[in-house]
Length: 329
Image 1: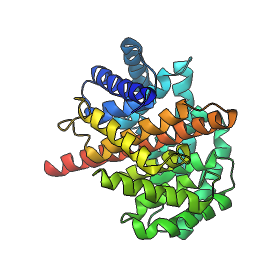
Image 2: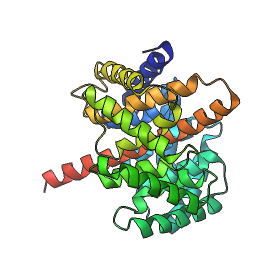
Image 3: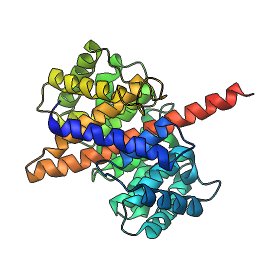
Image 4: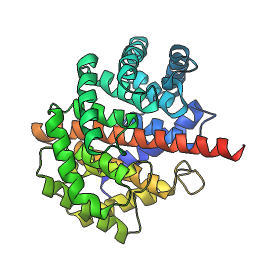
């Protein structure tokens, strides 16, 4: 892998290791989620602990913002703000707006963070999210739900109309459907592909090429909507050869597997580790952008990458908690 990719992988692993010192009662996946949300930030542990305490005091016992994985993601967002207290107050206010149109759950909490980070008018964004949801529900009654609210937030912030977005998502879905078993995860991927301007056939062919090359290297994205990471990866790497791209992802995955926080006994698992590797490679390509257009694209790609990783981590944490609760009954 190139120097930028290696450095980003090292920062992710180091930040995840440090996160375990901040969130001492959480597992490796939560620590990895915090590290990914921090992106390329080498953070101060004392400041992170102070932000964690602030978030705990402001979110309340029954707020989804205070749930395990979401609290960690909220802490990362607050940490990066110059005004932490104002940041968490804004996130709380926006979460209430999102909750009025969608269920009050961890995904709506993530949507609130995404909207606050954008600086856009929350009421307008949530109205657009609601329109997108209704159109998607009409096409995919069983696959569209309030758990997609974070994805709808990204779509609503794209500047495209709900009709344009849902039509493009449906076109991508029809092309890719024969190649994916989990149609719910596929719909998330297609929803994110829809925000990009490239031709539907081009985006879908790139997805299939990357999936095929990953399979050759015994890497697979499965479960927790992790396959959605292919959307920002495809956009970041339209000009790169799929084989070259998969080879770099495999190198990052191998490196992460050698790190205790992501290793075989960490609980992260190979599929999620592959997702983190895809995110590292996607953002590394963005870090190398030179033109203004590519820099803007890289910024959008970084935001989408973070949303996918956060949503997957939330989903995995919920699944883990549910399994643990079931085993004790």
